[in-house]
Amino acid sequence: MRFLANPSTDPHFNLAFDEYCLENVISNEPYFFLWRNRPSVIIGLNQNAYSEVNLKYLDEQGITLARRVTGGGAVYHDLQNLNYTIIGRDGISPAPMVEALRLLGVPAELSGRNDIFVEGRKVSGYARRVSKSQEIIHGTLMYDVDLETLTKVLDTPESKMRAKGIESVKSRVANLKDYLPGFGSLDEVQAALQEILADGDGPMDFPEGGLGEVKQLRDSKFATWDFIYGHSHEAGFTRKAKLPCGTVEANILIDHGLIKRISFSGDFLFDDPAEELAVRLEGCRLERDAILEALAGTDVPRYFKGTSSTDLAGLISY
Image (cartoon, rainbow, N blue to C red; front, side, top):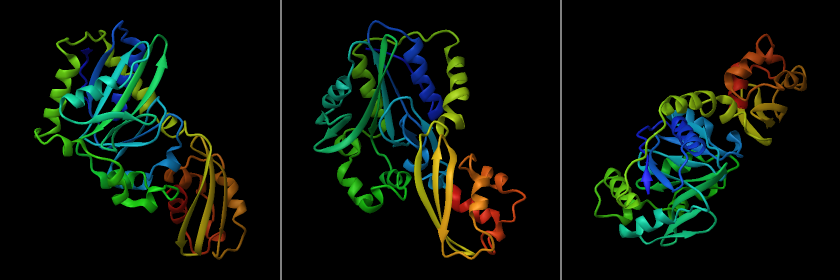
């Protein structure tokens, strides 16, 4: 297959690159490119960012959140994860990548709905999208991914991972490094896979001015709050914390990143019922700064004794 090069590690740019190629780099034959992201979590098109990802942990660790235009679940990427994209027509599949791994000595096989397994353990997930006359498959290849971080970024209060823990995750997934003892780094593996997949074919020409259009698509879509958070569909969840007023539980319903409804319960002390304050938060972004702005001028201690707007915003936003 012919190929493109994308050395970027910016997840928002790379997802824009995928979409741009699908829509604008048209070919009668399949083509591919290999790429990596700096530490990031990529959620599926229809997932809710607030209920699927530990946003507080991402913020603390400087991990980027991004949304792709294909379905499936949230995945963690770091620089020890290699991503691949194949674009073509008429039912393309990850089979070329599976065969390439086999040629490197990895007993890989397609299994399940959208996974590549090695000896019963998952090493890759992939997703698909059809657009116009072409379709895209893009997926991960975990080489030496930090599995502890992978677990933490997806460990929300609603997550099954909280009970299963890191050891359980390790039993279900695998890093390809364990199956590629002859390679010293992911760079070497990437070069070998590139050579096998290309099979003697050369690079493709990228449209003139295309990189500028990719950057514009990144800035206008993939890196925006509206796409990453605002695209989230309706979801409900609970935040609970011990505040100066007592234990407060916030029951939150959000839709497209905005608070649709919020109510408070707990053993906290108050002068006036919190329902009055809750109304002020409806339609607000589920972000700390936006909540503080909505609470500006409100006497929060009337509703939560001894509690500041900063305390309350910290409870609601994370």
